[in-house]
Length: 128
Image 1 (cartoon, rainbow, N blue to C red):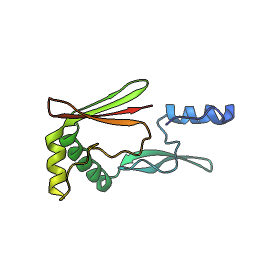
Image 2 (tube, helix red, strand yellow; image 1 turned 30 degrees about the vertical axis):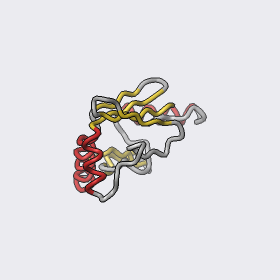
Image 3 (cartoon, rainbow, N blue to C red; image 1 turned 90 degrees about the vertical axis):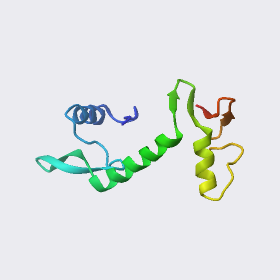
């Protein structure tokens, strides 16, 4: 979790110390996790993350499904490149009764482009 620089030095120091001791600084845990009270110090509750098995099962299925479509993700300083087999995207689109769109991968990111190459792969490049 990124800690903004605008926090006061005492708050920042306390958050860094909590993180160093493996305590959860956030409020809402990420999907697939829950938080629990690990210990109490006076009136303050120190929390840690634990796997929420019901949500984690869903997350595992999502990532297993994603592996069918994504072969490689490269994160660089100024761009992210995601590639995968075109045939898998087209099979999924036709199973839904849709034809694969020209860009193949929808995105909410402003600057992106989809590329289909001769090797039957698709690629999405997102400029950061």
